[in-house]
Length: 601
Ligand code: ZN
Figure 1: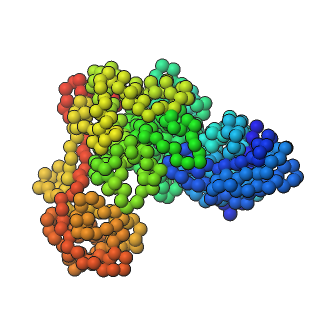
Figure 2: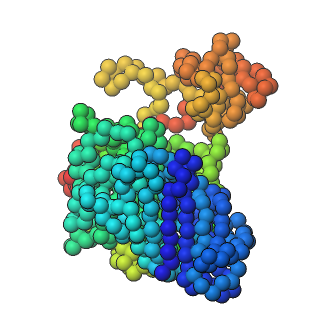
Figure 3: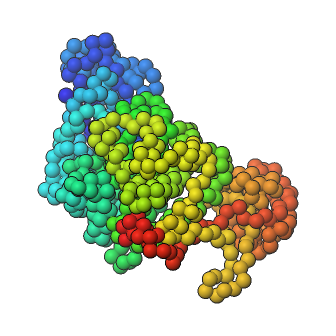
């Protein structure tokens, strides 16, 4: 057994004290390694940069310990039990980090627990210690790790267990004075924990989550409705402005904005709450898709460096497709609300020029240096394997339904992958998803995958959505008038650029889009526009001013690049993007039946 002990030693200084004790250290000198990244978030993060004061001892005797590379320490050979101790600075309030202050503590094992090299498969014991002091007496623990149960059915401080190192780092831990609620889904206890100030309607939140969880369990196991975990924890951190989630085998860590929580006095499903439900549904779907059905390259993870796979369009993209689909099938959103979400997704993908330059297979492979490290050029150069992957999932689902006359669907592909790979723990080889889908569809899907996954072609959504009685149309961005007034519509010009959100009110460009007016005029990211046609503009007035002109007008623009003033001619071009609209049409009965099968409503 490898024994870990973690103590919130100095909350005000954001310091955890960690010790790891190895009974049988490597006779050549034990090496300890802290991961360079956390599974689920594909970027090298070098968690070792937050490690301080490393020391080793054997009994009472100090043992020499030296750093051998950026994230590895090596101790001198010793006979008896070896204990390594170190501090970890924790001031990263993100789902992939570690955070500690006098209001709460949160950590992912990958941030704080060093791997004992050569003993990755060894069972682990983890002592989680309460901070010292009166004010911490009421603190509780929330985690899917197996450990001591508190009076309220949650967890308590004490000794926890993990079957090996990979399990140890796959159960994040929250501690503090949080709100805790539970519900059962298909007989499995689910916990919902909210950290941070809030006024959430917990009953509504748990009722909605329960429906979504049950729908997902039944998708993968329609006969038995059995879940692959014995308990599940939603660890939710509430902040003023934030969004993110990270999946784990029996829990998820989410960060949401306070405005996204359901309130007792607002019975509607607001767009914010819909976003929260989508996120929770997404991470829960990962319990099967990517935590258990996983790329061959991730079995096991190499925690020291990039793990390349071309399959994130499936593991993230199809999870993105299913997250909203599970909301409508479980009844927490309506069909029309679902179509609105899908239309947004389609519009987002098809308005980015980057999708014509990078395939989702390439985007998956380069996630480490591109999707996760976006800059001002990203909209023009990359495609999101989430967003386009979701559209490929939608297109594939509708294609299979059409090809099999509604006998099969993408659900069957997911279930087969679950049976063959998820339940056996075998990684999914490159190309296997395509083979599995082709077998279920019973038609040749070679061109479909070659074009949409490995090429940069958009899936044919207009034709496919028509088979389920949904019309896809486009509306020019910024048209005036509305369908009710029937006033003549006018397409409004746009700059073809995105303004920086924080620039003291200046009209500073954050991104300049391919083919837009700003790029044609010679403006670049970082430039600040100060005057249009000899009138001063700022972030609040620029767009309004632009919209007052007609397409084709040429304006005098004064801008600054760094501290150098530029005088430019800017001609307003047609907008390069438009808004996607999905509507239900008066379709033949077979389309309606197929739609009912698809959406479950
Ligand atoms: Zn995801």
